[in-house]
Structure formats: structure tokens, C-alpha cells
Picture 1 (cartoon, one colour):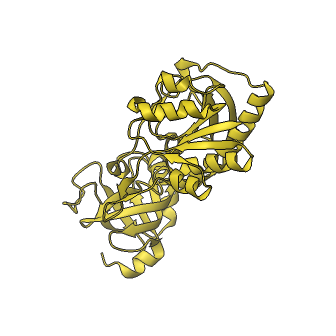
Picture 2: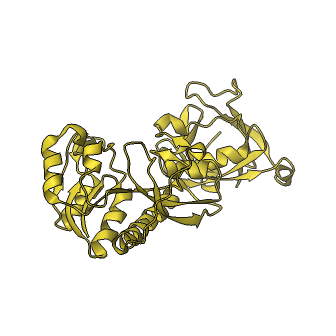
Picture 3: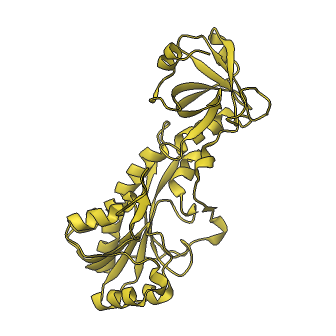
Length: 325
């Protein structure tokens, strides 16, 4: 099929590569303009643009495709059979949705109608879902509201992180779009309207989303640590320095008796204080050799892997060897 592909971040690269390997004619790639990134704020190409250029596919980077008549005319001239969209980052107007012969198909990283919006992968981990997946959807003018075409599901691992699920769903989305286009060509594709009453909307995360509120149950904080790994990462403060938490396990009140622990410090939600002056703070316990355990609103967290501001990521045992409380 003749395909125009629209996408921007690394998640979308897998979809583009699967389409290319399947032999579809990708006549044009549309992605977001170069953006300032990194410490020096230099403009960098999107991951999709880099991948498209390696495949020698023409690329355009409209700032706002909704109002870019020149870009729209180029899309019309391509006369695509289908436009495939994966994490493009701009909402398409109806006059673009009407261009391709078979319509515009979106690859979405959730089992719609659950988790409509910009950050479905992390929310599946944060909410403790047992399964996740990808959906191909016939796009309409709404936000992730179009008819469902096909889905692929997977079970989440006990230690699933936002990053590991991201990688799995990126590959799964590539597989699914190829299967979806095969069914489209054969005329066997069916459309299932979404049940709007089951829809949940989720938004983007910011750096502050990672700040831990220790008054919450340990099971929720443990999911926060996994769900926001690698970004924005879950964190607290220890003696005025940011402490990122990368891996933890939940301990019940009964289990904590198995450890020879002393209260050694406090984890706070504010860089400016080193005292437990808030319900969002946590008492920190240790045997001073191997274990670091934080008290939560309910139960405790065994902190397995952490990273103090200005230091490398390390195990709790290595941390205890070098840190002086």
C-alpha cells in the first residue's frame, strides 16, 4: 500500500520500520520540527526524522499541520492509500483525515477506550494493571475516539517499568499495524465503535510528578517508582539532596520484624528540610550494612536501588558503604 507516516518520538520509530520491512511504499514522513534539547539547548531532529532519513524517505516538519496549507497540498499530491499515525503530537483536522483512500489509522499504546491521551504506558504500571497492549484505530476528529480496528495484548511482569513496557509496546505496535494493513487490503477489517462510558483520559507527566508522597500506601509508591522509570523518575530528599529511587519492594509490618533495624534518618518531600515535619515524609530505617527501609502510609518499602544527587545509580548496600548519616 502507499503510506504516509506521521510520528515523532522513538516509540513511533518501530511502527515506521515495521511498515518499511513489510514492503509498503512509504512516500512521505511527517514529523515535528527540530526542537532544542540537552544541556546546551541545540536543535535536534526527532527520532522519526532520523530513522526516515536513514531509510531515504522524504520528510516534512510542519509547525502546525492544521493550518499549513502547503503541507496539506503535498499530502493530497501523494494520493496515499492510508495515513498511519503513531505519537505524532498534533491533532489532525478533518480535511487531512479525508485525504487517504482508506482513511487515517492510529497506533495507540493502550487497550482503548482505556487510557486515551498522551501517557498511556506509564499509567498502566502506576495503576497496577495486569495487562496492557496496543490498539489500531480509525481516526476521527476526536482525541483517541475513533473506531477500534485491531488489538494486541500482553501481560505485565511483576517488575514492569514504564521503560520496559514502552519497548514491548513499541514492537507490538509495529507488528499490529502490519497485520491491520493486511486485513485492510483483503477487505476483512472490521470496525468496532468505542464504548465511551469505559473511557479514561490521561495526561502528560512533568518532573514534579515523580515527587513521592510517603503518606500513600507502599504498594502505590512502589508502582510509582516503576511506572516513572526512566522518566521523570520517582524521587524524595535526603538531607537536602535529591534521592532518586529506581527499585523497591513492599514489606508488610510483620515482615519488617525480620530485620535488625535502627531509625537513621528521614526522607522528605522538600529539599529545604531534613526533619519529618510533614505527613509526606518517611522515617528511614537501616541495619547500616545492607538494608534501607522507608515507612509509608501503609506498610514499608525496601529500597533496593537508588541514586543520590551527583552520584551514580547503585544498590542500597553500596550506598550504605559510602554514605555517612
